[in-house]
Length: 134
Image: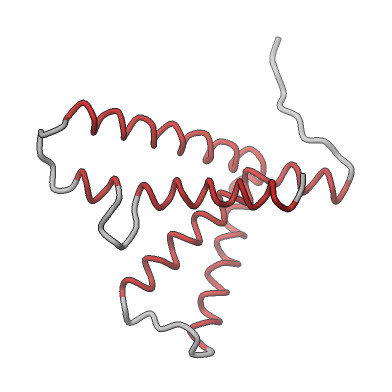
């Protein structure tokens, strides 16, 4: 995998997370909440498309790095946010800053998760395969 391949996967994860929710008020969450029945088929279609994206990314992440890897990646990202706050580079008193930090954190975890098998093959030469019961 090339660096550009990783960046594309990371950007796809970021797009998925930001389409689902972002603090600007322009997201699927903000479009659906509070619930109204107008444009119902379009809303259901959008939810299904985003849900499919989440299932693909979450399943790939869970299979490649597992729960422990997700926990460690989240801990690493949270510690980086803590460092930024401690150094005065970030102020969490503004809820928007916290929301952006968390959305980027989730996107980074998903981006690393879908790219991990490629990283591992480059680092160790080992291939990851899925077990198929046939």
